Image 1 (cartoon, helix red, strand yellow):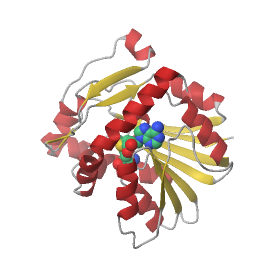
Image 2: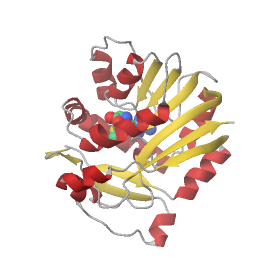
Image 3: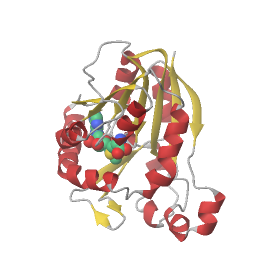
Image 4: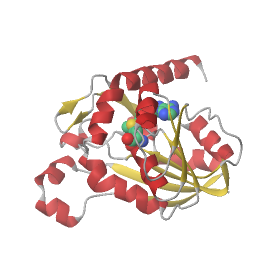
Length: 253
Ligand SMILES: C[S@@+](CC[C@H](N)C(=O)[O-])C[C@H]1O[C@@H](n2cnc3c(N)ncnc32)[C@H](O)[C@@H]1O
């Protein structure tokens, strides 16, 4: 990694260490409605039946998705750069299966070639300044025909404070450059102790980098609330002013 990229990666890790306990609270108290009422279902639908599959949960956080997939019979490994989050994930009881958790960055995975059938990246990619190395590693550790399921902020429409109703278009020069948005999480009234940078890059980055790393895009979805959610719940009307999420499914050739 170049010096600047390494410095940004180090800063991201430090910020996530500072936010680790905050994140455990947000997730374990089910405070993030985007997940509990929208994106979790979208990710699980995209994964489909996973019994017997070897799954890597990349950027696993405190491990809830790894536990869910393990309870469905998958053989799950979670990796994350934050030691605090890996400790929290490892300490959580897991009665229906036992995922393994390891501290590692997705740019340098401590696994052999062809180790996994599926890699899931749940809200990870907006925390990577340049995911090119991650895609290279995913290609290496996945079997041929293996899949990546990637849920992230929508690169075309997400702007600062979208969660709180902001809706602006992204000017072309910013859209086509990789853009970083500095903000604290504010989830259900809880503000994160540390600032986080959310990185967004154009759709053609995903198409080109996946192609160059040996993947074909099998599907692109845009998880969004139902008409009923929008009609019946002012929280969704304010909190989903535009398309906020993109879900990609890519297959290793
Ligand atoms: C928004 S959280 C999502 C965590 C979890 N997937 C979830 O949905 O709760 C982003 C996670 O990415 C992790 N992360 C950031 N950069 C990473 C990297 N280079 N390699 C692995 N994990 C990383 C952070 O530590 C954090 O846990």
